[in-house]
Length: 280
Image (cartoon, rainbow, N blue to C red):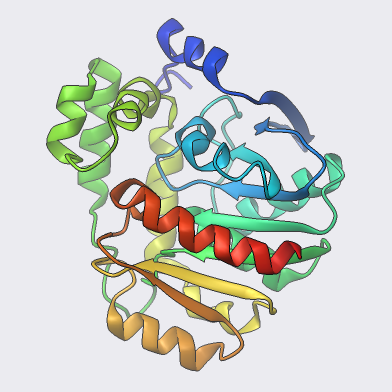
């Protein structure tokens, strides 16, 4: 679609990523993923609403000694095609297609934000064999609940800014705590996210209830959240414990919703600890 832009400098970033591109076709859609290789248990990484696969590179490369990370460009982002629709069911079906096509039976799912919702629903559907799931700060908004704290207008303004051209300094005004490389990648890759994909996903945050499927997410599963997150609040964490008592909840200090970016060391330590238990 014309509202998605991938510049030469953005594509050049891939030369510095220690992964190879993998492609999966599901229906009319071609999905792209970055495969970091190795003989470990597959870890399928599912990014957030405006994060293409490369945005999770700094996480994936720190996990290669434990697992084989494969990071997905969710439909409508990065190098993957646009979709005719962007429901949570669509995203879960795409995830199942990637697991099947790439032979990732027994994978662990690791998702952040939107990706955490996708991981949770995919695990709850039980259509592909998984070893477990780790959900990082999933949006708990939904019908009859408080709205998602970032408005659609805010996302649209960020996309417009990216399409007209931005840089790391401008990104840093909104995300001052992020590592510099991640600010640079955000500046170059945000324009690869489609406005329709973001808008429909944001509407899904209000219309698709996380707690409709969270109680059915099978163990072993963990919910990781930022101590200062406006998305997973203390009340939300309490409800999550009650709704799925078998799940493990882990709080990351000094982090808001962008858990890995706000506190990379703390978030990675928490995830590595969980993965050790899952792949043992």
